[in-house]
Structure formats: C-alpha cells, structure tokens
Length: 247
Ligand code: MF3
Ligand code: CO
Image 1 (cartoon, protein in one colour):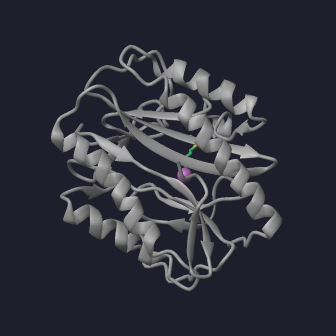
Image 2 (cartoon, protein in one colour):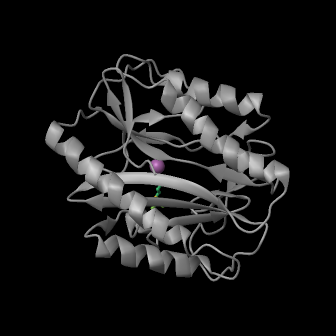
C-alpha cells in the first residue's frame, strides 16, 4: 500500500527535510583528511538531537550508528569506525532522521582532497542521474519510468547501476512502498500527488556487481572500484515534484 500524505503530513515532511539539510551541512564541514567516520557519526548524532529530531538508522535492525558512511568501494551501509579519511577518498553520507514521526532521507557523496577526473565524474554524474530520474516525476507516471531515466543517464556516461538496493516510499516509516529501482524493474504502478519517495541512484565506475561485507551490513563493489550515491526525499505533485531535502 502506498500512503498519500495529507497537507499536515506534507508540512511535517518538509520540516524533516529542512533539518536533514542542516544536519548534512554540519557533517560536511567536518569532512577533511584525518577525520574518522566515527567522529562524523558523533557530529551527526549531536546535530540531529539539537534540532529535536531522531536518528532513524540508529538501532534500525540493529544498525549501530546514526548515519551510514561509505568510503570508496563501499556502496552503502558503511558503519562509522576508526578509519581516517584521506585525500583521494570519496565518502557518501546517508542520513535519515525523523521529526515528529516523519522521516527524511538524503545522501551526498563528498570528495576528500583531490581525486582523479574519472572519480570526480562518477560523483557528479551520480547527482545528475538523480536529476534525470526526478525530472520525470509527476502524478500519473509509472514508477519504472524513474529507473529507466536513471539507468539511461548512467549507461550513457559509462557507469553501471547497482540493482541490489533501491529507493523507496518514505513517511511515517523510513521504508514504505513502492520500491523505486534505479533501473527498469517493470513496476507499472502510477504515482499520485501526495506520495513521498526517496530516489537514490548508486552508481559504479566498474561493474555493477556487489557483495555483502563480513560485518553483514556494508555492501561493497565486487571489483573494488569506487561507487557513488546521491539521494533526496521527493514529494510527488500534480504537475511535477518538490525535493524536500534540497540544498
Ligand atoms: N538510506 C538508507 C536506506 O534507505 C538508510 C539505511 S539505515 C540502516 O536503506 F539502518 F539500515 F542502515
Ligand atoms: Co533511502
């Protein structure tokens, strides 16, 4: 069942989205060579609480941190730890928080110091793949059209699409229906105004194949090449969309 949010709920989702942006900006300030991903997680927890929000990931199915921080070949669900960031890394920060019971989910991939041109393109093209996907959003389109647009953009730019993980509806729950794949999954369900979805392409420089790390959380690329992730929470409207976590 796909929930349709009332005007009151949409306003709470907007609030949650704004807090997500503020927390993300606060985390971004600390991203530099030498910082540990655990230190970034501590910053996130503190800011989330200061804004009167709750960290949705902390304790979710036993996840041990407030944010997922995934470096280089880590695709998603990186667990913050004592690893220090260094120049040449890319780091994705996947932040889900709730405000008065409503969740907002966003991911940004940041570049640490200098990276090669192809890694830089991976990061910027992953954001652009999100934009290609969100641009088709309006009431009446089929869910699969989002994935079609993302996949087309990715392939035209020489990137592969991770298929094991997908975007999702979001609202009172962090994960609601429908799945929002980053490829054509054949889902012919049509979007309606008032639905809220997280669109989140995960694109790889090498092959699309991934595996689950021994920690049972972190998904990594099989070939060890870098992966980037970009995500926003999006409201579907009659004639388009509103990005609730836009910065
Ligand atoms: N944005 C991630 C997702 O949609 C958040 C996962 S939280 C975790 O799957 F607790 F599962 F890590
Ligand atoms: Co998500």
